[in-house]
Structures are given as structure tokens and as C-alpha cells.
Image (tube, rainbow, N blue to C red):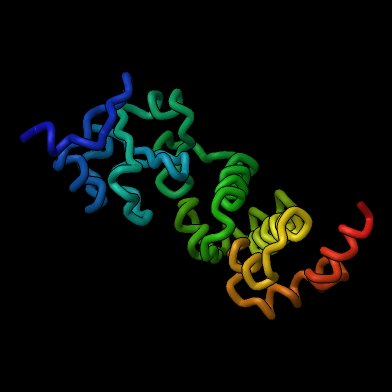
Length: 199
């Protein structure tokens, strides 16, 4: 019975075992467990106190640690919202975490709210801090990443423009074409033609 409860949780040498009790503490933000264990989320690289009000992660992405030091040693960063180490994560590190998430997930629907939720901060604070560190807003950064990916597709494949806009997370093709022209000075079709004529 026990093995079926814990199946899917590979135990790393520092990890604690996930139990139903711990999972309940995480999903109910139970502060009484704050000093008993910490949980980290593999997809975001962040670790939290059990009382953290961030959205509930997928159970299979969670790792349990006895203390904050173990989570830090496993290369997880402290959450900016619940501050599990009682220190502030430097802004530049926090923004690096967000840009890394965007780089890996740009084809998904990304809003300021989604990013703030993932990064454990408020949308306003995220927007302001991101712009302060990078010089552009999170939305502009997402557009940049998507358009760079689109350029690669245009040069290296024969995919239709509508397919490329879908592949880079922009299902609205007319909007994609307008944005591409605004940022590059060419439509996607002109860009492809121009790049190929240079070979």
C-alpha cells in the first residue's frame, strides 16, 4: 500500500518522502508545518514554506526538503513571496529566473499574472522590477523571444506563416504578421525571401 502512495516520488539523498500529510499541508497553506519541511517546485526552480499562498504546484513536480539549506544546495531559489530563508532574493536573480521560464515556455499563453504567479510576486512588482533590470517589460521580452524563434523557423523551414505563428505561441496570425513587421520592418514572407536571397 505504502509503495503505491509514494510511487512517482524518486527519493534523492537529501529529499524527504512525500506523504499525504505533507501534501495536504502544501495545498492548504498550513503555516503550522513551516518549520517542519520546505517544498520545492522542479518546473520553476523555487522553494517555499508550506504557508506560501502561491498556486498549488503539480504533485509530481514537488520535492520535499527538511530545511532551507538542503533546498539551496539542490540549486532551488527562495520564493520572493513567502521568503523561506527570511531574506530577499536579489532582483537580478529573480528576473533571471523569470526570463529563463519565458525562454523555455514561450509557446504557452503567458500573461503578467501567470508569470507573477509562477515567480511568486505581484504583477505590478514583477513588471517594474523586470523593466528596471532588463530595460524592457516582460511582455516585450516575450515578444522578442517569440519573434527570434519565428525568424529561425522562417529561415530554416518551409512552414506556412500561420503554422509558424502557432509554433511560437501566437495563434492570431494577423497580429503575428503586424508585430513582426513593426519589429523587423518586414512581413514574415518578405523576411524569409530576403534572408534566402542572401545565401
